Image (cartoon, rainbow, N blue to C red; front, side, top):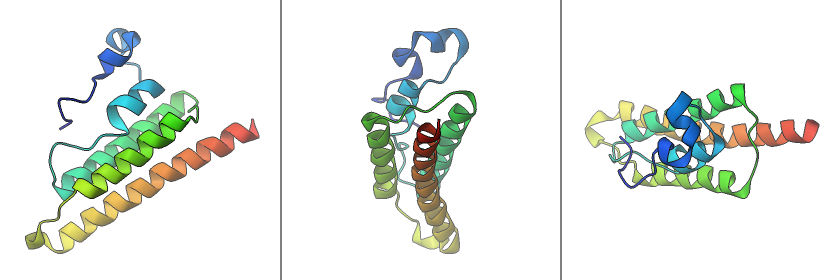
Amino acid sequence: MIPSDVPRPYQISETFRKDDSLTQAILEQCYLPCSPITSSLEENAKFSVLVESLVRLFLTRADLCLTPTLDEAVEIGINEREKKAKSDRKRGQEAEMSRLFLKMSGQRLRSLLLWAEQSTLDD
């Protein structure tokens, strides 16, 4: 599903090989800025929701450190998935639902960053 030129988690973090731990570096380099190989609207929406879920999972176990690279990775990924996604005209309402899922997932990713930023300021 992910293009072969995207780094793999084990290439970013030595601890990933030992315990499958998710780090911010892995999120920033392996998942957030990526889009799936396919141009399918539905697959891009699914991938966006998957990435969003990874960020939520990470937030349950660790603090997200807001950095320019994190913000950039999120924006690149949202833009890439929206730009790459092509709808199948034959699917009509299903395609519109997928487009809505893709757009809303991007908005939730941005909201998660804002929430993390606010949480950091409150501490």
